[in-house]
Amino acid sequence: MKKKAANQTSVLQAKPIATILRRNTLVAIGLSLSIASTSAQQKESQTYTDSKSTILLGQSLPLSGPSAQIGKKYQAGAQAWFNEVNRQGGINGKKIRLISLDDQYEPEQTIRNTKTLLDRPNLLALFGYVGTPTTKEILPVIEKRKVPLIAPLTGASILRDNELNMVVNLRASYQMEIDKIVDSLVRNARQKIAIIYQDDAFGKDGLKSAESALKRHGLKPYAISTVQRNSAQIQSALQILTSSRPNAIIIISTYVSSAALSKELLQRDIKAQIMNVSFVGTRALEQSLPVGQANGIGVSQVVPFPWDRWIPIVAEYQRLMRVNNPSARFGFTSLEGFMAAKLITEGIKNVQGPLTKETLLTSLKSIKKVDLGGFQLDLSSNNKQASNYVELTFFGAQQWEP
Image 1 (tube, rainbow, N blue to C red):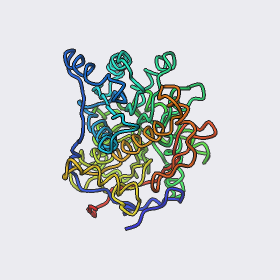
Image 2 (image 1 turned 180 degrees about the horizontal axis):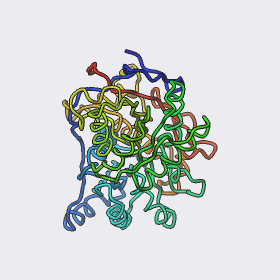
Image 3 (image 1 turned 45 degrees about the vertical axis):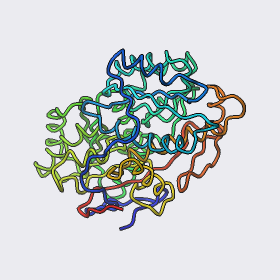
């Protein structure tokens, strides 16, 4: 079975153009440093602040609650690469230590976690935050305190603002993802496109992107409704979709809402093409639906197919994910975490002179056409993101593993 290349036009069809694996729980590997108490925080502070032997990174992401699968998978992928770097002796003799704090995908907790992390002596950078509504809240403080934030898991436009100096993104934007989704839908005569969005910064950014993408085709959203963050309460959105009968639906939310809505639509025999942006959590979405019900649902992706071992970086990712856990499952989110970790280590390795927050940023922003093995990074020319890679994938009935 073949996939469309990232720079080719993908065609929506009844049968999938890319197949997602059968339901399995991704087993997180490596260091999971979610801190549950003040005593634990103090213990870690003592352990991980020796700048002579460690490079200290801090992270806030959902490790519990409804959106935990996204955070755990992203962390597992990143830690797989950091573990490999440390096995090889670190970078210039320094081991990488990642402190991961649980925010349950709630902005208030993200703010508290960030304050805790910024109080750590010798913290080099923040890394791999997850989500738009959470990450948005810490932007003023990191800009004020001049602390880099590297590779947050969000494609929101606010993270790509030219006024931001401390943020370095890995992934393509939500605008690029939704442009590709809308182009494919319209090309396949699906022009009655409804938008269901999460009622927060993430969803509103996606709605704006969808309206912009539709406008290029002379269209407006056929119907619009909202869902709440971390919630499976989708009755209002379901009512609007049932009455409007669109032939395509773009859902801009996490797997919790998307799965609940998809399940109800299928039960009501509403034959609309359902599309999601990458942040939905591909494997988590599949696992949240009864066997076979995910078939035909589409998800835009910002990293290559995680089961395509012909791509060198994917083969490396698969090998390292299973170094400490032979049963670890592969997926788009953990692959993105793996690539995010590669991005920051690329920056650290190429620092000229002492490693500081400032020299790390300078090094990262000078990255130009670096090939990680089938995935190119380029942050030259004041680019706000290292990659423009986007492709469309669809769940399918055929189940296979590498």
